[in-house]
Length: 113
Image 1 (tube, rainbow, N blue to C red):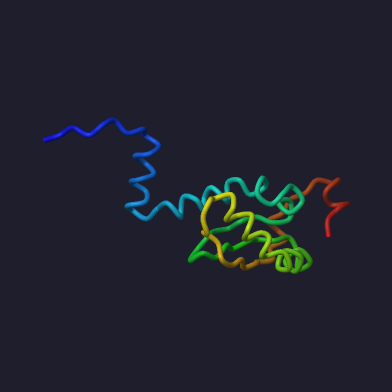
Image 2 (image 1 turned 90 degrees about the vertical axis):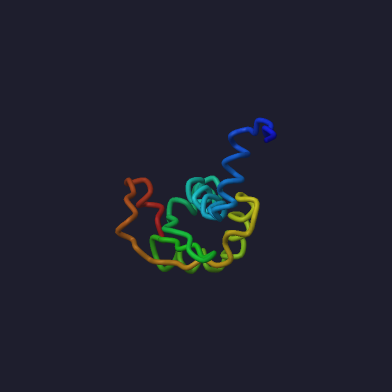
């Protein structure tokens, strides 16, 4: 029996996740964890990713105004997310208006829509 060469842990884990088909799910979590970096500070203040299911990102937004704005920019957001993850993990975004989930200080309240 031949011994295989040493494989870096990162490579071994990536291979394991691919075999288990967890790689896209992990990339989705990566996009969620880096939400502000992906979409920018302003959008991140008024939106929060909830989950990714069947290539659809479910996004919580502060108001109908923000849901409409982000719906108009949906293609741009999908492109940014997929670029960050290195593959097409998102093909659609659905918005859920939930203003109660957004706590702002006085400065942000004065600037909110």
